Structure formats: structure tokens, C-alpha cells
Amino acid sequence: MSAETVQLLGVSRRYGHQVAVNAVDLTLRAGECIGLVGHNGAGKSTLMKLMLGLIRPSEGSVRVFGEDPAAGAAARARRELGYLPENVALHPSMTGAETLAFYARLKRQPVAANAALLERAGIAQAAHRRVGTYSKGMRQRLGLAQALLGNPRALLLDEPTSGLDPALRQHFYEIIGELRRNGTMVLLSSHALAELEGQVDRVVVMNQGRKVADGSIADLRRLAAIRPRIRLHLPMAPRAVVNGADPWAGWAAAPGGAMELSCAEDELSGVLRGLPATARDIEILRPSLDELYAAFQTGAA
Amino acid sequence: MRQILIIAAKELRDGLRNRWVVATTGLLAALALTLAFLGAAPTGSVNVDPLAVTIVSLSSLTIFLVPLIALLLSYDAIVGEVDRGTMALLLTYPVARWQVVLGKFAGHLCILGFATVAGYGIAGLALQLTGSGDPGAWAAFAAMIGSSVLLGGVFIAIGYLISTLVRDRGTAGGIAIGVWLLFVLLYDMALLGVLVADQGRTLTASTLNVLLLLNPADAYRLLNLAGSQAVSGFAGVAGLGASTGLGAAALLGALLAWIVLPLTAAMALFTRRQV
Image (tube, rainbow over all chains, first blue to last red; front, side):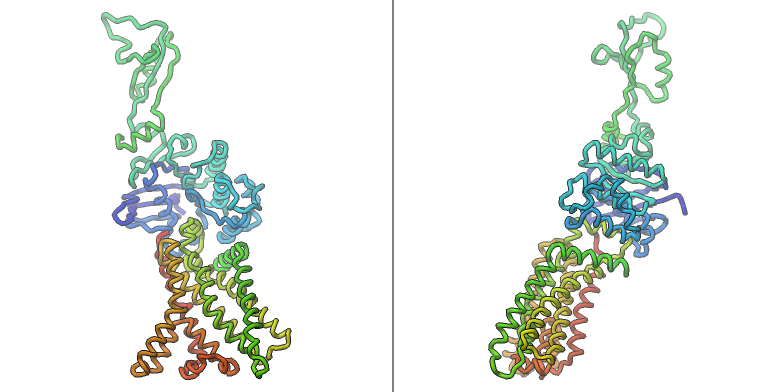
């Protein structure tokens, strides 16, 4: 068993003239938690459907647990996969418990274990109500419970938290955190990079079907080359230096009487060490994740 | 096999829950009872078995109603689930696409089979209990019920084929109604028109046989109206059946082929379809 859970090599997927996924190479390893970020229509869902074998690539190869997921014999690989589609659709006339029992049987899992799963997803109290009466949050919880059936080794979650309230979102990330600690590979897509901070090991940024960035959030910052800024307040404005080097060369006045310097990441500690003891309210301003994301989407990086 | 049964059981439960089973059983039972008692009235004191007459009228009813019910059950089966998004999730499970189609077929056939057996069976029992049924006609009655289920299976299979061919539920519904009109009404009218116009000059009996087998509704009609001596006496078209020389085996074979071919085509198309 190789550590590569999912491997995409030069994968393209076209719908007529439209290219949904364009020459993507991607390797997802066991135990990783990967965020897949991009606008609507950037190819995130198509990428997941390719991994699930719902669609075949126009070019390139997709391997999941070393098998082609679109081949008929991929039943073994599918038993190891959990999938939560975007806006999960479930049969409205079945109750939550029946829905989960149906999927458990298809996955050859004991139905008796479902009660614990419903409990874990937080819908045990609504298990015997029809899915048609569920709110969006409850459907999403049931969708997650279904994805967790049989302790899959890889989970693909398509925008799992879009449209959820913050408390539920937190609960989702707690469950994902638990899974990651147990060595499950989790791939989750989102259109907000900021939401994924602290939740994922690695971020893959998609733009118009292309993979434009792949790495940790720190890697992305380096790649984007948006320089951090130091901002501080001084008790009095620095005196002009007549001879010798000006210690405040490069600093600019910022709103509110502050001073600001933009520098490279590796100069940061040197600059901080050279600051006078009188400096107050020292802040290091890094580009927000939204700025970072925008930089990748506009192709600046 | 297991996966097919799981899907079939789910379809069956859906059918029970959305009242399809109750509604179709009730409809068929009500119509069958009406036909059994009103339709048998004109036999009066003539020495004719009411059960045999009921078979004739019930099989005429079946030709209109059962294909319609079957198509309504099935036209939405694939395209509807794809549309609602439940299919994409189902197909990520360890289940092959042909198993999905076959499982749904088994489930829907059970729904229709139960409705037919129960609905018509009630009418038959009622006739028997009122003391007017002839035990000898029961074999023909059972054959009629069996072939009605078979006819339902044909149109469920055709409905699946429609459902895998189109991208839109509305289109599927429209085509299903068109198919029903074609096989149940238009085909026979056209055939009759051709026969009248031709005056037996170029259309040979064997050509007619093939033409009759090409329509599952006609195969069903011949099977029931000409199948039994007791019945064929009262059926208007029985003379046609007798002269075609099509055996019950050929007619049954035609019905089975009409199930197998569309169903196989549906599975093959669905396997290649993008979800």
C-alpha cells in the first residue's frame, strides 16, 4: 500500500469546448488534510468527481488507492471513500435513520453502528423524522454521517461548511480534526481561504481549471511574495539625522501617527531587534488570506 | 445480487410511502370489480362463464392502464435521481450502474406486480364467492394476471430506456406519454388502416405476425384473447388470433424480449452517461 491515496497525472476534463479541469497534477497522501480553494466554477467539484470515478478524465490518469476509480472493478476503492456532495441531496421520504441504514447496507457496514454515527454528527434526536423536514444544517449533518460510514481512509467533502452557522461549522471542523488525527485523508473544498486557516495542512488553489498554487499557507505567502509590514508608534517623531545612517530610513508615516516599514520575511527579525526600547504597539501586518487568495486568482503570484 | 436487492427494497419502500402501491392497487381493484359485476351482467342466462367474460374485459382494460402506470412509475427513475442529485451520491458507493438499473426495475416490478395481483385477484375472488365463477376459467385468469405483470415489466423497461436517454425530466414524461399513445392506440389504428387499404394483396399473414409481435400490447392482447378456448369464444378479435397461428410461446417470448432489450439498452447507456 503506497502512501499516495489519490494521484492525478496531467488530468484534463472538457465539456464540449469548455475546459473544467486543465492539466492538473496532484498527489494527496494518507493522513493529510488538504483544502481545495477556488471560485465557483474553478473546477473543484469536477476534480472531486474525477477522484470518485463519476466522470472520466478527457486526458491523463486518476488513481485512487492505486486503482482507476471509474473502472467497474473499483468497488474496493469506493468502500474506502467517503463523499459529501455540495448541497447534499437525500431522499426526502426516508427518515434520517433509514437513509443511513440504506447507505450502510450498500457499503456492507453493520447497521447497528449507525446510532453512534448519528450521535456523532449531532442528529440523533432527529433520526426518526423524514429528511424532507430537515433544515440545511441537519441535512449537512446527515450527509457527513453518511460520508463517515465504515471509517473511510479518504474523505472528499465538497464545500461542507457553506451556508452553515458558525457553531455548526466549528463542530464540522472538530470532527474533521478527529479524523485527521486518526490518519484519514481529508480533502475539503471551499471558496474562502480564510476559513481553512488552522484546519488544513496544505492548500491547493484552483483557478479556471488550473492548479495555480499548492502548499501550506506559509508556502503560499512566500509564493505570493506579498511583503509583511511592521507598524509601531514612537513617543516622539524621530529626529532628522544629519550625518551617519538614518535608522528610520525606509519607514513611512502611517495613519494615526504610526510608522510603517515593508520588508522581506527574512529581514523581519533583524528589523525587530534594531528597534528602540521606546517603540510601542508593535504590530506585524501580514497579508490577510483574502488578499493572498486574490493575489493567486488575479495571477499576480 | 445483494446490492440489487438493497436498491429494490428501497424502491419498494418508496412506493409504499408515496402511496403508489395503495393508489394503483385501489384503482385496479375498483375497475376490475366494476368490470366483473357490470361486465358480467349481459351474459344473463346464456350459458357463459362470467370469469371468462371478465378476462376479456380486464385484459382490454390492462392494455390501456398497465402500460400507463408502468411508464409513470419508471420515466423518472434515472433522470429524476440524476436531476435531484441523489444519483451522484449513490454511484460513489460500491454499486455498479447496471445494478442500480436492475435493482430499481425489480422494485418497480414488485410494486406493479403486487397492485395487479391484488387488484385483479380481489375481483376474481369476489366473483368466485358470489358463486358465479367457473373453476375451469381460473387457469386463464391466473395467466391473464401473470401476463399483465409481464406487460407492466415491458413498459417499465421502456420507461427506463427513456429515462436514461434524456437530460430532462419533462422531456422524459413527454416521450413516455408519446410511447404510450403509439403502442396502445396509434399502432393498432395504423395497422388496421394498412390492412383495410391493402385488401390482403401484399400483406401476408407472416408479415402481419411480425407486425403484431413488434407491439408488446398486441402480443399481450393475442396471448389473452386467443390463449384459452373458453375465452376466445367471446373476444371479438379472437378470430384474428386464431388465424395468426402465433403460439403462446412466441407471444411470451416477444414480451420477454421487450423487457430484456430495452433494459439492457438502458444499462448500457447509463453506464456511459455522465452524472
